Every structure is written in structure tokens, then in C-alpha cells.
Amino acid sequence: MENHKESHHRVCPWWLGYILASPVRKLLHNPRRILAPHVKEGMTVLDFGSAMGFFSIPLAQMVGPEGKVICIDLQEKMIARLIRRAKKAGVTAQIETRLCTQDSLGLESLAGTIDFALLFAVVHEVLAREILFAGLASALNAPGSLLVAEPRGHISVENFARTLSVANEHGFIVAGTPQIARSHAVLLRRAPAN
Image (cartoon, rainbow, N blue to C red; front, side, top):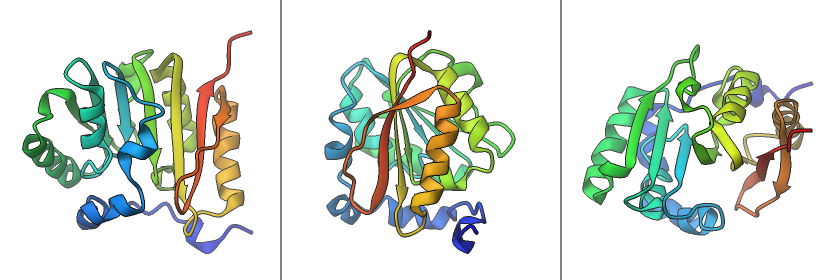
């Protein structure tokens, strides 16, 4: 039987974004330490479920002036705050924001353009994991990779395994298991075509 906490696909309230974007959070989840092995200058990166940009701003700094970070979120207030934070950090040229809906994840126009995608503590909020991973499989370019991390205290091992099973059904294979504090985490790549 599925854990009661996991049976609801509740979206993080917009005001909680202030806590998620707090500099104190870097003590637990340092964006540069987590992302440095995967992100290089000039890349096009997708931060799906970007909220107020806790990872988006460092990503924009890491990809540099020739790179791009596409930030997608469901909540307009999250995106508005991310834009303000990007201006303050001087990285608006690298950041593109998009609103998605529960019916459209906003990935359709990204086919083959993404070098690296990040799903940090967001998969459990998505109603249709199948649609999410199908869209990501299409958006990633051939050598592209996808880092998925879900909170251990909120998501069971079984639920995370189901997420990986859905990802596998859409052509993703495990390329690594990075250690991220208090998280189930996996690095995925698209399986080579036969």
C-alpha cells in the first residue's frame, strides 16, 4: 500500500519558495557542489520545477554568457520572484522562464536542445510522470543527462523506484548515483538507440 503522504500530488505553496531559496539551504544542498560534475560553460540547461531559482541562479552563472538556463514552473509567483533574483544576480541574459500547467509541461518546443536537465524535489508534484519523462526524453540531446533527486523524508524507496521505472520506460538508463544529502538521487542518460 502506498504511503499516505505520497498518494497526493500536492504542489509546493509559492510562499514556501522563500524558504527553499534561502542561502542557509546551501549548507545542505550546495548547488555548485551538486551540479559542477554535470554542467559546463555554454550548455543549455533545463531546471524543471525551478521555483524561485535556488538552482537556476547558480546554473546561469555556471553556463556563462554563451549558455542558457530554461526555468519552468507551475506557479507565476515563483517565476516572478526568480526573475527578480536573476536581475539582482546579473544573469537575466542566461535565464529564460516559462510557465507550465498540469496539462502541458512546456517541453514541446525544446526537442533535442537540452544538454542537462535537473529535477530536484519536483517529480512527486507532477501528476503524470509518464508525460514528464516522455517530454524530457525528447528535449535532451543525444549525450544529454538528467539529474533526479527526491527528498528521502517525503518519498519512499519504493516510490523512487517507481519513478526510475517510468524513466526507464521512456528510454533512460542509470549513469550514476550521486550522493546528495537527504535525497534519493540518480543521474540518467538516454539509452543508446539500437
